[in-house]
Image 1 (cartoon, one colour):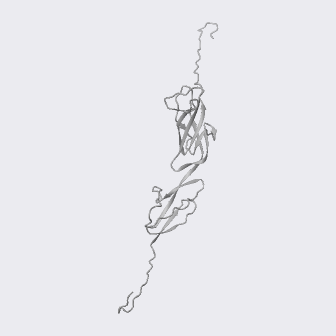
Image 2: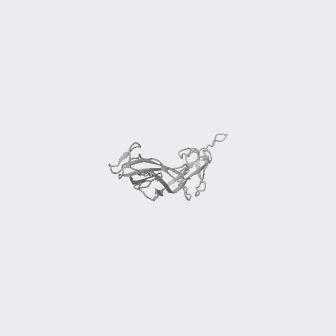
Length: 212
C-alpha cells in the first residue's frame, strides 16, 4: 500500500477463505456417517462402510434412486448428498437337482422354492469314476458311477447370498463336496433306470383252468 504523496509504502497480506462444500451421507436406515467439508475442486474421502442389520452395504450413489454410483475421485464443486445402497442378505439357500439315472443325459436345471430371491443352475457335471471327466448334455450317465454336480447360485437384484449361508441340496443340509462363496457341489451315484412293468390279464370267456 502506498500513500497518495508517495511518502509511505507498506505491504499487507489479505487472506481469502477458500470456498468449501459439504458432502452429506444418507445411509438409508444404516448407521450414521459424518458429513465432510471439502475445499472446492478437492476430493471427498470414502468413509468407513456403514452397517445395517441383515443387509450388506453395496456402495454410495449420487442419486436417491440409486442408479449412479459415486466415484470418490470426483472433484467437489457443489454441496452434494450421497445415498447408501443396501442388499438384503440371504442366509439360507435350498435347491433340488435332478439326480443322475443310468442311460439318461445330464440335466442342468435346478429347482428353487417359489419366492426365493436367487436362481441356480448346474454349470458342470463330472464323472468321478472317469478322472473327473466333464460331461456335456449329449453324454449319458452310467449306472453305478459316481458323479458330481457343480451348482452356481446367483442372488437377484437387491439381494446377496451370505458367505456363511446354509445350503440344503436335495434335502441334505449343508452338503458341500465342493464349495466357494456361491457355488456348491453334490455327489450322486447314478441309479439304474426304472423297469417298466405291465400286467397281462386273461379273460377265459366262461372257460376254466390256470391262466398264470
